[in-house]
Image (cartoon, rainbow, N blue to C red; front, side, top):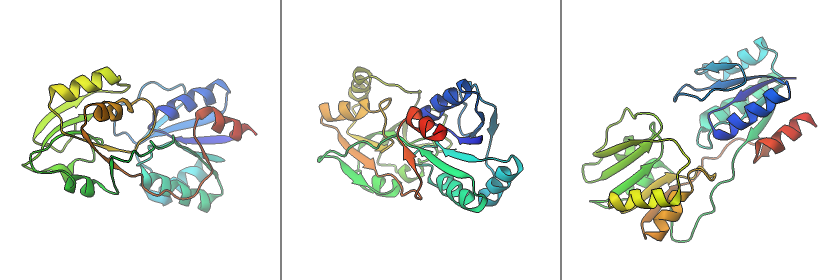
Length: 234
């Protein structure tokens, strides 16, 4: 068994530790968008050069299993992994955290552009969509508190806050009160580390605009590193 772990999430880091502890021959691949914490597995950084490049890597390194543990919104990489799996015969497994259950009073949209269009003039927006997803919010009539792990290249009117989860309910509520936030815009990333902002927004009666997940290609899916590892070793 030789595993290529496509990472970029907390769950991927947890799975990397489990694979290393079991002595499984695995490499952790990271896109290189943000600095990555230490991993017990060998790492590679950067893209593969599309499906052809990924398939070439799989063949060159005799990869038997691809584990897609990328972010739920990294749809292009998931599509490339599925295509490369079909081309090379390497088995594809997906580790993906469950989405947050939508609440009736939230406004669910399908794109960043739709989220920006849902915001009224003069809104004070808490924007947690990632540093690479800000172009749609370049409006003079919006004030944006942009929280990201890496400094964004796109500059918006407002404030940038660099922070890494987890975030507590108390801290999220205090942040929204201090900045007089009227709207929260976020992707439906799921998981517990960033869920507190949703409860804080509801408690403060702040409108939530949430972006639905993209459709990913079919693949066997597991919600936790432990259950995926069990399937890998079965």
